[in-house]
Image 1: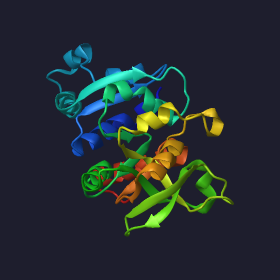
Image 2 (image 1 turned 135 degrees about the horizontal axis):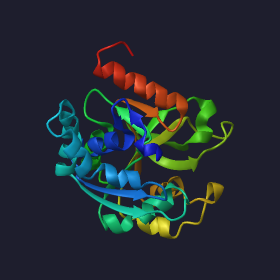
Image 3 (image 1 turned 90 degrees about the vertical axis):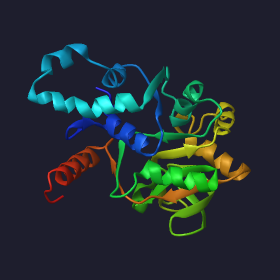
Image 4 (image 1 turned 135 degrees about the vertical axis):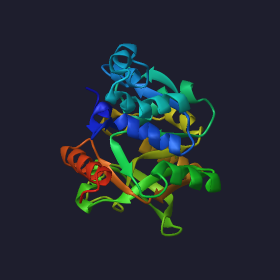
Length: 254
């Protein structure tokens, strides 16, 4: 099963991500898949057999959410043939995007906020700034080797103007503990940088390295979002996200 299809209470991670994008005013979904991920395409499609079986039953109401998503958004898919890192995956999606600014959302980072979604917050900031923006949060210093780490000039309580980014530094070498999470808004010149970028850490094309170059050539902002992020790629994060969503939906203590 693709990890993006793991359910948090009643719907898969990928659906939370698409709903967040729609809330942010983004309605064209370009999804980069890979071998064994056909379930992602099938989820955002009509299942005639299933719908016929539950038509007129109490379960028909469960289809309303996914039907609403299908009505509001269009979906395009392409495959990343080799797993060469996030930067390579983004470059693989270029034909779906073209020369336009775009958002990148990693579904295994589930973000929950009481107000506007994290991506909606970032879109609003992009409209003010017009440059690439990455979502960041502080992590324990001992965990910097799990993230891209940002350093730069603090503009206000929420925004840091990026001076450098480094991929998964050892805690003893990390410049800060400000970690990039799975939400980005990128300007289209990032594609030119990615095309010429040599493989970095672990032999992969790292979006962190491309953003570091973009920050040197122009401007990249790190945005401290309002909300809570769950790393659903880990067992602990997946369980915590399930408990949090269940508690919020059923009004129990989280």
